[in-house]
Image 1: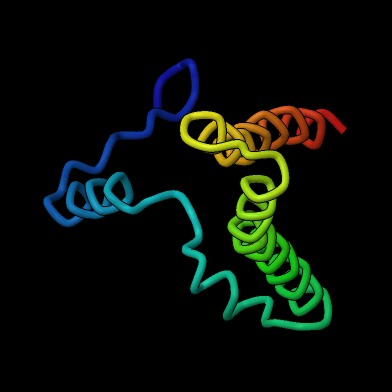
Image 2: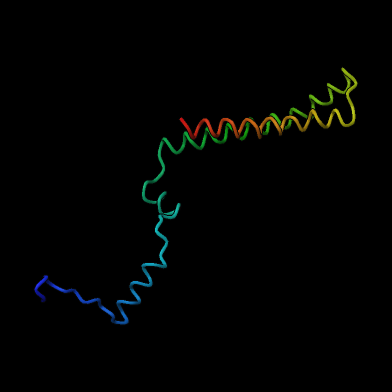
Length: 109
């Protein structure tokens, strides 16, 4: 003890150093499996899963129906070649623009 108060000495033992090293190496996060085991699954998680499944189903339906729509466009209006390819690509472009725009909106609000 000094006139300024107690002085704490740092433990330099090998065991203490190994403990400090292990603390630094452990990730400061909770793994998804551990989090799900802790909170479990309930009604909310089932609803979120169902909504995600409906979104994927809607996307797949849109892509599958595009094939039939493009056949009709070819037969009805005579659109072929590059123009038909641009029609098909515009669906993906619309999804990319919409996902970016609505993703930013959802992050904001």
